[in-house]
Image (cartoon, rainbow, N blue to C red):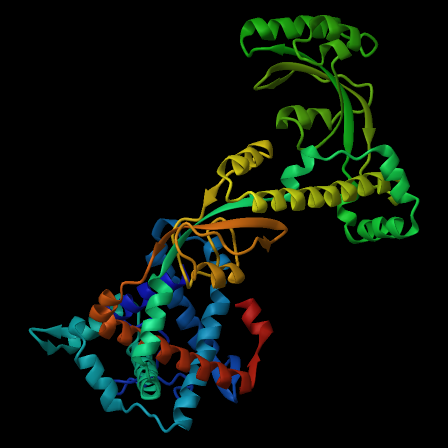
Amino acid sequence: MLNAIRRRQKILLTVFVSLISIVFVFWGFYGDFQSRGVGLSNIAKVNGESISLTEYQLHYERDIELYQNIFKDQFSKDLIERFNLKQLTLDRLIDQKILNQGAKQLGLAITDLQVRDEIVRTPAFQKEGKFNKEIYLLLLKHRRFTPAFYESQVRQELTQDALLSLFEKQVHVSDRELQDRYILEHDKINLEFIRMDPNAFKSKIFVTEGEIELELSKPKRLEEAQKYYNEQGNLFKQSEEVRARHILIKGTDETAKNKIKEVQSLVTPQNFSEMAKSHSQDSSAPQGGDLGYFSKGKMVKAFEEVAFSLQPGMISNIVETPFGFHLIKVEDRRAAKQKTFEEVKHSIMKTRLEEEKAKVFAEQVSSDVWNNKDQKSSLGSILKKHDLKWDETGLFARNVLTLPKIGKADEIKKVVFDLAPKTYAPRLFQLQNHTYLLKVKQRESADLKKFEAEKEKSKENMRRQKQMELYSEWLKELKEKSKIIVKKDIFQEF
């Protein structure tokens, strides 16, 4: 999204006026805010050079206009806050100061004549192929830019271009480097895989009460459970709960409503359970409408809001939900609390044992899959028995950061691109507690003939990329060495 904004920003700059963080001058309208005594209150200082509040305000207003132009009807105050536009504007101005200071250190200086020539050459300011001062001032006025602000932007852009040209001279791109990059981007593979996930086997795992008690009797295991409880305390917070009964008459028509009114006229706290058994149309009717204990978020909203508003023994008025009409009686309430270790140690140990057994089970299944991978019938039986199936990644290139449907897996990439189609990877791979059997389904090698045809264009793209990398690294180093002071009280109040 930010890249798209920057691209759009560049377009707006070129067509009407630059919104790209730049600085400059034309016809006596000097763009240095400080030299004109504007904005005596400073919002920040960069190596002793001030950023005035007026300067910041002008750039912030222009940035807001830019975002309004991009997002149109979707633009809102929330969007400004989500993009943290105030901070982005300040960061950009700080970078501008550092950039200009660095350019001076390198002996780069943009003259007033260069600024003037750049403006004169801008097609938007021309009439019949010649610069027209009236059009220039009219367009600036239309965009609510002062000549000083716009000229300062142009100077900044020219400074940035001069720096980029300087870094361009340091860039070298070899044919071998280009070819390696092309192969990374265009050599592709599609993998078939079987994923063995221990969690998927938990339904096949059984832990007895005796096993749990035996493990809890071992000091080391008890200590493990206690450590887990201490580290995962949030898992053992018991939310507020109510125990309720209800009588449901299904439907939302007048017949259903009259029926629930009839029941309401007869029901009392003492006979609620019996009335539920004889009149409720819910599956809980045989239990006297008893729903047991439940916390917020477990029932439909209208039902839940009423249930949690009642005290034990109270019966609600008629409540309508998508299921029909209800009468609700609350039997008991439990306040929210933190469960003690003694209350949960049994469930903790049960979970730990299930996880351990599932891991061992998964390892055995993985071994069986590996040993039978070349036996189609045997492998099919194993997959069917354990509800496993083949999946595939789809084509991906060598330079992807994550493998589709698998995730970040540099070790897998190192191996599979050396394999021929229909070939298994030489081993099982472990990734995020999952085990993978991998097989190459399809290969698409990079077309080196096409590379030769596109080489010059690729070389130019790589040169620009390296140029920007050098520029960004240079600016980053300068910023790390700079003394930057932000007046937070002024910035926060802005």
